[in-house]
Length: 93
Image (cartoon, rainbow, N blue to C red; front, side):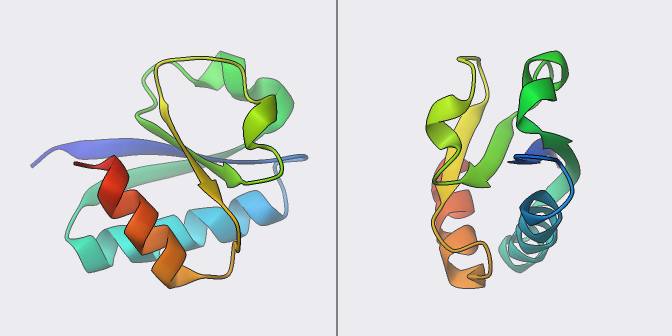
């Protein structure tokens, strides 16, 4: 089974990125998908993006990400597991 690499991103790499990581891990378990989820601040994304399959980020910061090969999932409510699950499912297709 493939293990997907996900990067959870926020402004400082400390707050919402940790919440996004936890939600992504829960959503992946619910979907039966193996993932590795790391966290980063938005200024270091370019250096960490190689090898990353999916970037999860709050909707407010999504437009500030540098272009790259990773699929970006913009999350409106970082506390919403259903939103993360639905968007992660769509990204894995």
